[in-house]
Image (cartoon, rainbow, N blue to C red; front, side, top):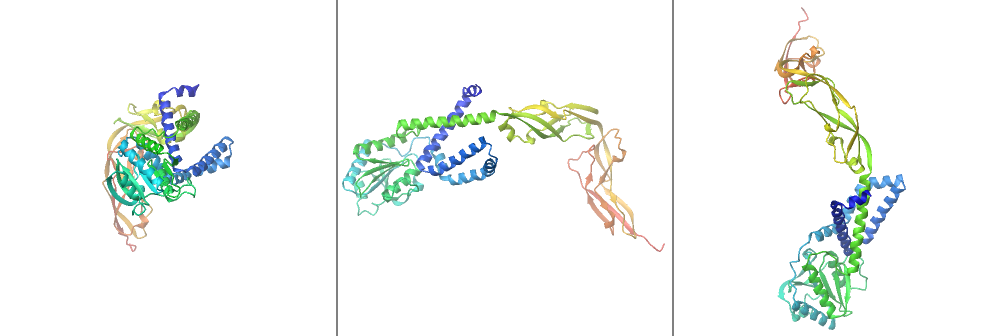
Length: 477
């Protein structure tokens, strides 16, 4: 019932539709690129992990969890071409700029192909789609000529220097000829097919272009598109394929080419997989767990008349509950306990810790606090000039005695608690100065040690200069 209520939410419906769209485009991209053997292995590994998790197989679960980050990076490197193509195809939501469909252009291409088949002349014609093909082409001769039957026939004449390469047709014009195409890296075609067919498949696997091949050995016509080869026997089928390619690239690209029933099944399967993934994530995130976490305490004192003195906790243990996914990503720094002392007065006071002292995430609830109450002491403060006393440790080497010790500055302004019982702390000491190391007059720079109950008016604790003058003792006297 809970998941049904969530499914009726428009946020969930949009989430599932976007997830299904990503799965569908990824499936079509991988289908065209022919990488299903690797995908099958990955899916098998994921299936083993889920089975191990259900059966609570500690060893396999530990191995999978510890190598998952490395495996993810390996998959990104392994599927870099596929991921790149997926994002390219997902971003091409516009009409192709290279579409200039005319009946005359279609007739010219179809008649020329029919004549090439009759004469058993090898030919390779490329009609680009939305995706750019330039990065996959090499060599060739630019022409940009008006398309005609004699021009196509002359290009694929066996005595022409570019007859073994591909012809590129753009905007109803012959853009280039003699172009070399990338050879297919998959096992989609058998060894009985020649270089033209493997080159056509190579470009069809990497782009959405339509590639038409005429085999000089068999005198047959084949069309390559989206990583698939289709044999064509009738001129009318060639015209229909070309017109279909132009039409699909001139409208909004929903990428449901081919058999409508097959495309419908793929869309339905993508929706089903997206719903399953969303349901698993929903149940895993909706599972509420409890957790104890130690968080830092932050004290805010804005009053100029009081100061926090004595012992104070720096950490508090929080007992919280929430969805497992939220608890796993929660860190102590995200849940500081803030104690507001802006309206506090001098004396010992108790402060109860509640949810008002925390900024809990939306799905996190506070169960208990340890300690639930903080007993703090505040003292009234006054501004005083506190004497700085050098901290001399040990004794001088034999034969020396101290003549004078001067401290610069001798005093420093600070906020001092009123009625401080520790009278010995009414001065600041420097860091230790070890006298056994002194053999002559010396100037030293020392740090200042400020007790917790005092507060300097300067933002930065200054260095203190200590000048020690010594003299030699006359042993004869």
